[in-house]
Structures are given as C-alpha cells and as structure tokens.
Amino acid sequence: MASPIQTMEILDNATAEILRRKTPSERLAIANGMWRFARDMLRANLAREHPDWADDVINRTVAKRLSHGAV
Image 1: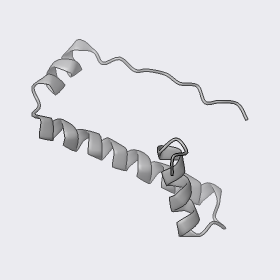
Image 2: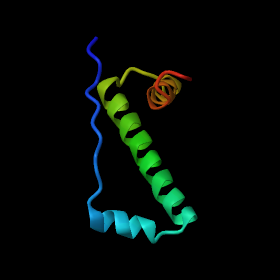
Image 3: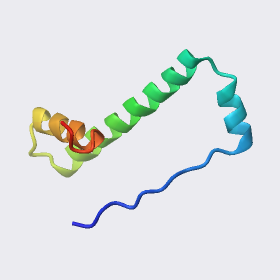
C-alpha cells in the first residue's frame, strides 16, 4: 500500500495574526473543533464506504487512523 502524501500548510500573515490574538483557551477550542470535524468526516466516509460495518468497527477504525495506529 502506498503511503499517503504528507503536506504542510502555511498560514498567511493575516491568519497568523488573528490566531496570535486568541487566548490559549480560544486556540484550544478551535483545535478541538477541527479535530471533531475531522473525526466526524472520517466516520461518515467510512460508514458510506462500508455500509456493512458495525458502529464499533467504524469507531475503532477512526481511532486507529487518527492516532496513526497507536490505538
């Protein structure tokens, strides 16, 4: 299996400045929202691609992928 292409996105100066002005708790809330969005999108895609999979299988697969196999 081919490894996924890894890219790094760079923030523009305006976005970086907006994030610098956020409190640590605001930045953490943003990161949490992004994490939850990624988890929910992955879960929905897996459910669509594998309609025969039980919820617990989908949830384990999501956890494994988001943890890079550590779970």
